[in-house]
Amino acid sequence: MLTVNGRVCVTRIRWHGSDGSRTVVDGYLDRAERTISVGVREMACRLNGGGTNFDRTAENLAQVAQVSASGETLRTLIEDEGRKVVKAFREGTLPITWTAKDCVVEPGTAGPTRVYFGCDGVMAPMVTEGEKAKRRQNIKAKRRGRTCRPLPRAKAGADQKYKEFKLVTYYDEPKKHRLVLGTKGNGQEAGRIMRRLAGRIDLAAAAEKVGNVDGAPWIRGQVEGRCLPLDALGLDFYHLAENVHKARRVVYGESDSAGMVWAGDILHAFKHDGYDLTWEKLVTWRALWRGPKRAAADALMNYVRERREMILYPEFAAKGWQIGSGPTESCCKTLTQRLKGSGMRWDADNAEAIMALGSLRESNLWKTYWQTQLSQTT
Image (tube, rainbow, N blue to C red; front, top):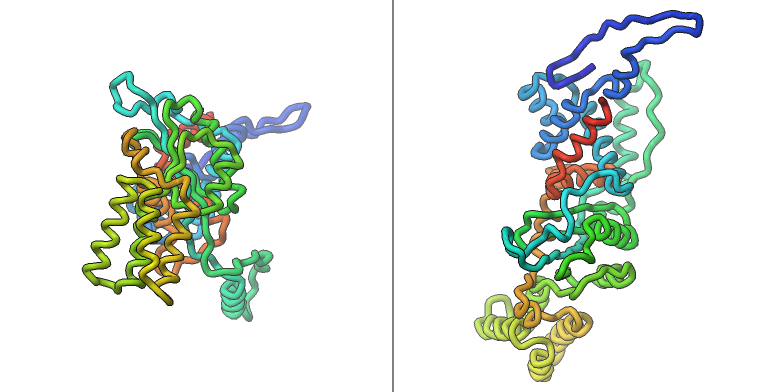
């Protein structure tokens, strides 16, 4: 059995009787997962989070814990563990250590509670069907003329080089309490996660429930379709600014000072005057242009008009609410950091498993998860 203290060899006694034979210690060893202990699994997953590949993780594990295992063994172990985490989140067997009632705006006071909701999509590199076929041919060429076990059945590859994963987050004002989970599924699956996690933290019990998202139609559709009990759903100010500057570059050029002044004025108006007054400014500004510049102005106006109900910056400011989705954007980076190393390509389910392990860290549930795993072996 492989443990964090090295390999342990067990000598067992088999007892025989009229009803057959049995080895008493086997029951314990089975619960301890026979060959790899919870300690090794936890250490491997921990080191993998900061690693660049599974071979490097194997080297670090040997150096830190004097446990020898191949990179391929650790790859299988870590991805399997990630799938267990996905299952635990899905089935609700992973204890969540906080609820909305714990999310006081000012910790240490009896003030109101506030929970923020976020959702976003993030791209991760996939192994395409063509790449899988090429890899398989290379393996067959190396095995030619040798007696080897048959290769396992080929697993289908992706149809695109990149796939969008969906991420759902809940967090409080000081970001002490967080709950994060990603999925390889579509918007419908993300919507189910929104609703499931909202129930786990009793979102409806918060005095203030605020959403900040990038304005993607599928996110708004799922929020409404899943009846999330939000007080308001706002458009992330950074994404609004991104679209304003996109129009500026077409109309004024990359670094024209007049364009910079215009963009600053429009963003200030959105932030402090609200939608209606700023819309009138955009209408007047649009009339100045023709051709490609008019098209850029139209694109910006269509963008803000479609998100009119989400442009609530003065209202958010009056209540002390955040107007950005920075915490969600940050989670998108940290959960996919391990997936985006040089030359890395993934199957979707394996990428989801690696992201799930990252979710434990971001949700401060790492210790909780491993305690539940340890309790299952006793």
